[in-house]
Amino acid sequence: MDGGVLVLAATPIGRPDDAPPRLARELAEADVVAAEDTRRLKRLCADLGVTVGGRVVSYFEGNEASRTGSLVDALEAGERVLLVTDAGMPSVSDPGYRLVAAAVERGLPVTAVPGPSAVLTALAVSGLPVDRFCFEGFLPRKAGERARRLASLADEPRTMVFFEAPHRTGAALTAMAEAFGGERPGAVCRELTKTHEEVRRAGLADLAAWAGDGVRGEVTIVVAGATGGGDVPTDPASLAALVAEAEAAGLTRKDAILDVARRAGLPKREVYDAVHKKP
Image: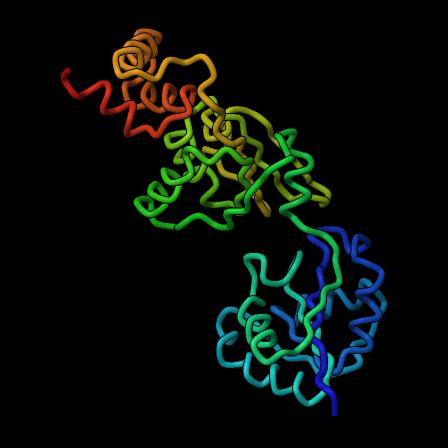
C-alpha cells in the first residue's frame, strides 16, 4: 500500500462560519483525525454539520511526543491523517511541528487546508506596516527571560507579532515599553472575529496602562519595528546630549536612553556607554 498523507487543517479562530470549505470534507474523509482537544472538535463538527468518518485521537502538548510515532505509522500504512488544533493553523504555537518533521523525515507527503490565522488577521487590522514582519510566538513567562528576549528584539526593523495570555498581557506590554520605548506604536487585538472583537492602537506605554486593569479573551499583540536613525547624530557626545535633552523633558534616564537608541537606530548599550563612559 502506498504511503498516506498528513493534512494540516486550519480551524476558525472565532466564528465557525469562517471555516474553509474543504475542512468539512477532510473531517468526513480522513482515516484518522488528530485533535488538540477532542471536545472542541466535537463542537466544531456540530457547527459544521459534519460527522467524522475515521477514528479520533487526541494530540496535544502532553502526549505529542508519545503519539507522534503511531500517527507516522498510520501514514506509512497508507492512511490519511488530519491534524486540527483549537484555532488557526496547526504547528503555529500549537502541536504539529513534531509530527510534520517526522513525516518529512520518512519522505511522507504533507499538505494543508489553508484558512484562518490570528497572526495574519492581527497584522492586517493593526494599521502597522505589513511589507515585512516576523512572528515571535509567546514570550517567556519569567520576567528576566522575557526582558532578555525583548532586548534582543529592540533593533528588529520588521513589524513583530506576539501571542500572549490575557492575564500576562499587561506585564508583557510594560516590558515591551521598557525594551522598545513607550512611544513605539503597537496594537492589541483581542477576540478577533468574535462578538467582542477589539483592536486597540496606541503607543506601548499607553497600551500597558490600558491593560493594567486586566484583559480578557484571546490576545495577539502587534508592534512596529525599529526605525532607522535618519538625521539623528550617532557620535557619543551627540548621543549623550540627546539623552540629557530627553531627561530634561521628563523621561527617566533609562527611558531616555531607550528613546534615543530607538531614534538613532542603535543598540541601547551603545547609547548607555555614550552617557556613562567618560571621554
